[in-house]
Length: 77
Image 1 (cartoon, helix red, strand yellow):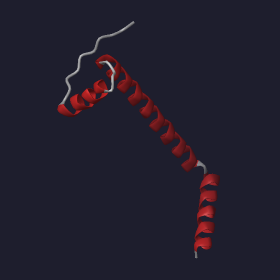
Image 2 (cartoon, rainbow, N blue to C red):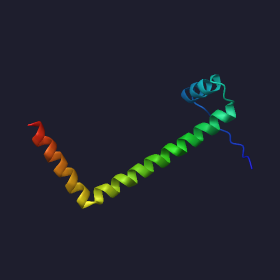
Image 3 (tube, rainbow, N blue to C red):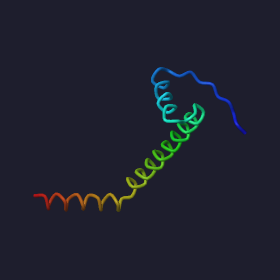
Image 4 (cartoon, one colour):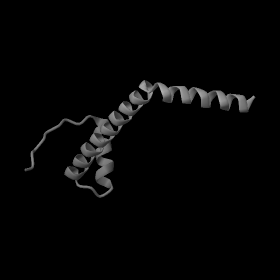
């Protein structure tokens, strides 16, 4: 079921919408795609944040990273 949404656009967002429309998208298509793209980007950021937290909590992984960094430093010297 489709739901109507009303928004006020500032000048920057209006220019961005104009750019999307100039590419051949309808106004509705551009807005829907932008919302979906923003949601995907947010989910990716959240997934990456969770992965980083898991790696930081993994003591064995942190130790290995330190060992690799020390090795790389010794090779550089």
